[in-house]
Length: 66
Image (cartoon, rainbow, N blue to C red; front, side):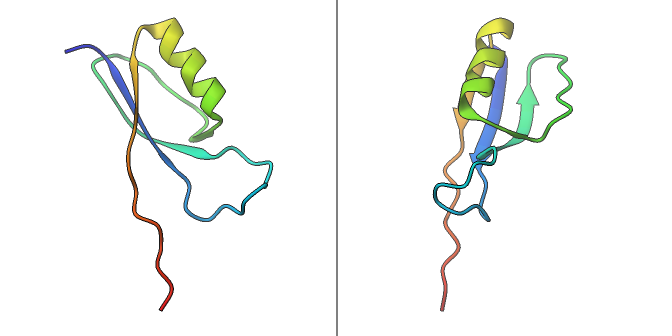
């Protein structure tokens, strides 16, 4: 099994907001340090391509209002 980078969408972000949308949850199979926990999808794709890792986007449940 190769290296993997696990990310999920941030929960408290508004639609159209110009902030990084993804949060890095974990890294498996390689020695990589990320200093920014919130990143854009393009940035994550570039990191995955450069390191030969697979980018895994986790399905997180949306917060439900009662």
